[in-house]
Amino acid sequence: MAKAILLLSGGLDSGLAGKILLSCGIEVTAVNATSPFCRCSGHGGGCAAAARMAAQLGIPLTTVAKGEAYWEIVKNPRFGRGSGVNPCIDCRIHVLSLAREIMEASGALFVATGEVLGQRPMSQHRRALSRIERESGLTGRLLRPLSARLFPPTEAERQGIVPRWKLLAIEGRSRRPQMELARELALGDYPCPAGGCLLTDPQFSCRVREMLAREPDSRLADAVLLIHGRHFRLPDGERVVIGRNEKDNRAIAGLARPGDALLVPAEGSGPTGLCRPGTEAAVRAAAGLVAGYGKSVTRLSLTRPGESLSRTLADFSPLAPEQAEPWRIACKEDPHRTEAKRLPSSPPPGGPGGDDPPR
Ligand code: SF4
Image (cartoon, rainbow, N blue to C red; front, top):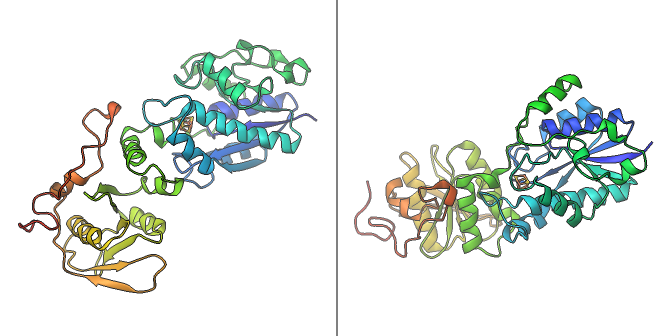
């Protein structure tokens, strides 16, 4: 039986592509590529929607991480970005290159996707689809069953492994043909909206741009921190992250690394703060921020990852959120043309080191 690798997002289109391949008698293995920026994978874990879809199709699922190489792509995409910092064409090339490696290692004949011609403005127009096929090293071995009849036959069709008449000619942004096909093929449960990853989000893109400008050597783990909490840039360049809720607090504490300072209320509840790097002066400013966002936080416990001793801090002035605003990494009003706010060169009035204690 001929084998194929199916890129499975968990959304409807790739599920339908899988159904079509199975109806052709192909042995299909699904591959789901994850990154911390996936919206439906719990930030880096396996994608639950892809697992459900693979189970529904009755096919095995392999999960691969887009990895550190993906962050390098986000930093320097060869083929541009979308409306956010999403490097969709490079991302597809990367993911399909990973799928090609799995294909070659497993003896599969081709890779299939649920891509539809013209559905997505950046990566699914004809020229982009050709480029993605070529650059991923899959020329002639990339089958897009939903739109295949709008393209020249692939190797699998030429060899008669996949009958061309079973393939479709869906084009454009309407989802109606896929919905009808899902009913026809009795494919249900497709909860992943496939609305793009976090890199398409204007506010998140703003944070990423700021990181790319200020931390050019950042790594993927640094970018993961951007997913959680409120972010501030101190005048000397340190980053401070303040949790907004328990989930943020846990994530921020889990992402702390040697060189950072972690601040949590010494008693009662309140936000967790991370200061990177955790220099003494920056820690004092960060303490003011944490106390400003916490209710009645008067003492903070300071720990440093990799060091066993902790310290209690009480000599800081809480900084009200509106006073902290000049340090906040946020966007200007137009979310589609985002730009990190101009960073202050000196502390805000009444802030750490200021004369007038806030609140
Ligand atoms: S939206 Fe995100 S995951 Fe999807 S192709 Fe673009 S960069 Fe990749």
